[in-house]
Image 1 (cartoon, helix red, strand yellow):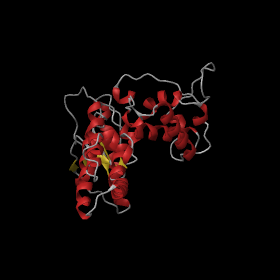
Image 2: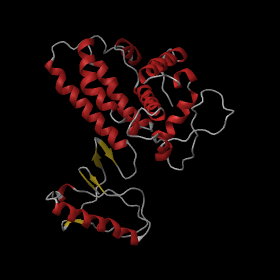
Image 3: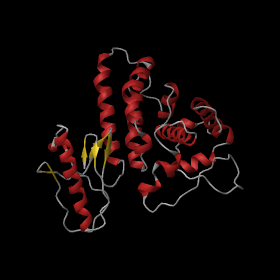
Image 4: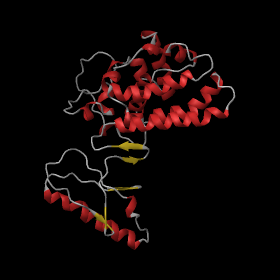
Length: 280
């Protein structure tokens, strides 16, 4: 159940477990009445994850109002679906990002590189890269949905419409989104493993490799198995391969800014055509 910043969750194994969320809902009602902070029950929803073997799905109530079961819910800027796949979120982000640019562009008589960089960096790119650690596309279709936006917007710049995509990226000092997404994953992993992120503990996401005979840097991560794609492509799993492959001088960087600079240098050295390079 989601209601603004109030969330209730319960793993349902059997029909007996279905009564637990309703009991919690009653306690929430009592709390809200005691503190004179009533819920707007019309804005509260039920989102069920995974598959259920029960033929009947229980209806839950808040303040005597039945709560609807939804197929997608927006929470903290992310669209979440029962499958936990980012497809719906990617399509929503792509539509919103393109709408933002088309609303702003007519206000400028000259849409050159300088104007594009300011508008794209301020209104479009933040939408494409927002919370990418939680919503990074794993399928080719979802990736293409976002990359297509960058392809289209770079054609709007004066003198760039007839040039190949890779040339437009070079002229506008941009990179493919998959490179930016991988870079963002590595930066987040670096912050967590070195204790630079006060909210996320590395032990909740990663496990250090126990083998002492591995080559490379000393902060290698243990690869864990995954049965489902949603787990396989989750942040803490997908970043391990790229993290373990980095040289020690990047991993042992004294700051995030140093990591960014060294990683960019490393990428350009071993992939000089990085703007035409797609990371798998």
